Image (cartoon, rainbow, N blue to C red):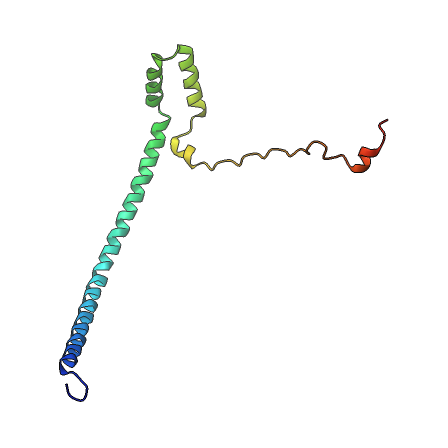
Length: 137
């Protein structure tokens, strides 16, 4: 140790500076490669997103078409035949055909606001002290 400075710690500090500079240079190179590849990745992600959206739209359209189909109603009617009377099956099919909503529509509809109960005055609320003291006619 000369002049209060340890030569080995100076060497170690210099080595750490070099390693840090090397790591920063390597990180910049990795970043440049990632940016160049990122353009391709972004385009691929965009294409996948468009394909996924198209698939979802087609699936919804197919589901909506199948929801109120003759095949579905016939299947429902045949499953009910052994369990209910013919009249009950006919009523169910009439209701199903006239008022049925596809499940996606039923879930997507916003819930309606509940009506508030009317507030009525509490018993004796309208009686004032002057009213209570008057003689009854």
